[in-house]
Length: 306
Image (cartoon, rainbow, N blue to C red; front, top):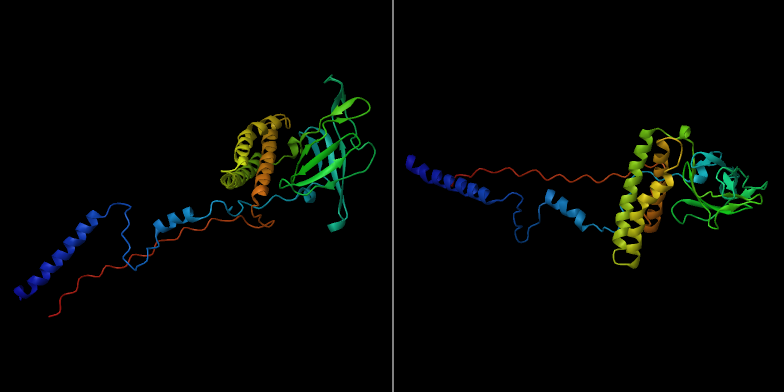
């Protein structure tokens, strides 16, 4: 009996010794070669390789829901230059294709070079000024207001408006000059709390960074690439400069910086043609990493048939 079981015991010891030697030679992170005609295992290594195969020039889904159109949310609100001076009210009449937007605005300027000689002219000059749509060239709804003393271009955000004056400051007959360029929005008391501003700023920053990476990759070998990098590098300093005097408390510059960040991300997304989620849709989630398949059970060696 002992002699008959001796060959089986020796074979078992040889199998175990071979398995231990192979385990010692298997380095951490090494992958066993795929046999000829076999298929590669679908484990974490395959999952890590997937992103490198994706096209970096295709933008992923939006980080969060898109900004609501300003023409839907701004009518009836009173916006003030830098959250302090003047007033701008957009009024809406009609609906659908028959919708018309008009604007009433007063500015705060000065007469001559004396900063103490303040004037507050009515930009409308007693006239009804209708806004003319210019489309969405930078991702936001843009309108033109042809006032008697100047022409303004208004980029509408959900709760504020970025105003520019292509022909320069507004000038009136009584030697009053008004520079309306900048952010028109709510006062400090009307601004949402800090926590809301911080959460919205995080979303805006992520949208901007995602769009920037895609556009930067597309423009890498073009003359526009250097121009875009220069614009992006100077955006932070520009934002700080134009928002420095918004409001009368610390929350004012933070709100202003959020609005310019939202506008910047919308502009970059418009350039790359990033897909926009439908309003009210939940934020897109990253796909879950696939789990490795369970290891096959090790079958014990079977005794030789006699």
